[in-house]
Image (cartoon, rainbow, N blue to C red):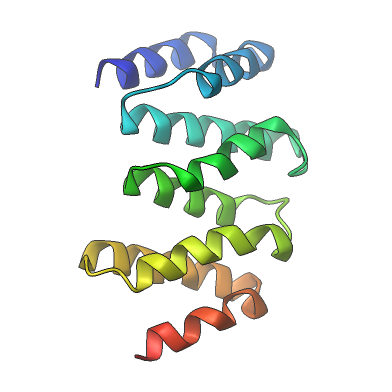
Length: 141
């Protein structure tokens, strides 16, 4: 929890300087954060910067979000998948890893994960219906 608050404070101090935020993201994405809340906040900061600058998905910041799909904490994994889905510059090919994670969450035994996955899957289906056809079978069963 301390890392989350420290990251939040650093972000608030530097939020007007995009270069400082970029350095903050690079520094903490390479560090081993113990707090899943800090990871989620870092994912959100990264997504905001990617959307504001209009960068494509071929940068190291997108790679950080993509690497969070393989994190050990479910909250971080869901946050990364949800963020990838909501990025403006993502293509259907790049959505496949997030859709695979959502498909695993749909078949989970935890109702919260299933609900969150279905909700996020709905966002994907509105823009890219072909990307979620594999999940339709899991939803119907």
